[in-house]
Length: 460
View (cartoon, one colour):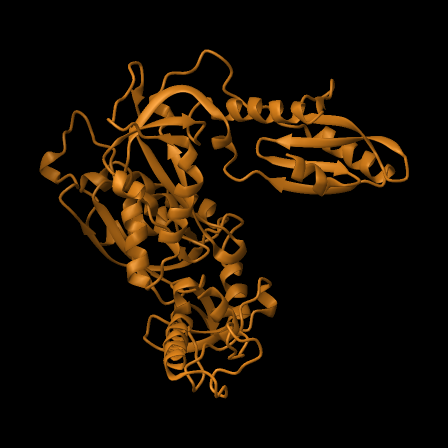
């Protein structure tokens, strides 16, 4: 099926079984084979039409300049030509990406944007960590739930310093509106919140009584401080415009709502990569001395390609501090500068690499187990031993450092006396020039200085 898809993508309809024989022009092709091939090609066309399931921009929230204002819209689908084929071709460089998208705005209007325009506006409204922000307009409503303290529950002897249960409907300058919890309003827009509370006679409510009156009294001084700050609210629910789930169930629900499988595929990949870290016993036996811990998934979006990245993290906070060291040493900046100079003087190539899922290459000394969740598939609910240095365990950094150092020693490297994270071994160039090649380690990130650095990586 993969080969047929590649042929369709190139616009060539050739039989793989008979070289250079056209499917519809070959008289020797019998009716049965022709019918089967037609079915295959129809299935391939359906596969091509469902390519949106793997499009990284779908469902992204992006702020575009529309007229004299900036409006936030949602990327809802790829644009197609009159024959139903997606317009444009994906490219790793956003500038050369020719895809086109339909974007819907809060007022219901839909406009077309190219992929490079979408990427430009997406990255221009986020910080270096991918967090987007909205410009505050005004507070238009408020609400509270059953968790909010009532006036009757307030004790004069012990005032309650809480913001629980209250939220405010905020209108943003991009044309959208959303409810924001009081704790975040107090941190981001304290003056606007206090003015609204006073205007609607909410000052006596326990969530406001402990701070709003004091805030209003010092109004002039507070305004002077606030005027020096940007009137921005940083969103914690999205990264590079993509909605971030908090649990596996939320991730799968986002896939269902957006008609994609991006989060499901990324979770399955993460669990495949982490599979060596887990051990299921046939009788679900847990050895004596093993401690039960919890775990959770951390979800993020990578800037390049908007790749969904979940990370399985063990609850190391529930374990006791190991007796031996739990830290992984790292190279110093001075060593990096010196070695770059050495590389330049000796005409050495420098390449960097990242060890994927580095920690789980090392065995763990901690005796812990957990209960398998839904991401474990048919093993859900079973006790599972953690046998590798998972992210989150207290000693994982040190275990990976010891494991990696042992591998480097086996390959002839030894630590520098000046910096133990600078590893070196003797090498010779094809011309006969003798020198030292170096490997610099910063936990799971490495730099290699050599006349043949790719050969060094392959040997590891």
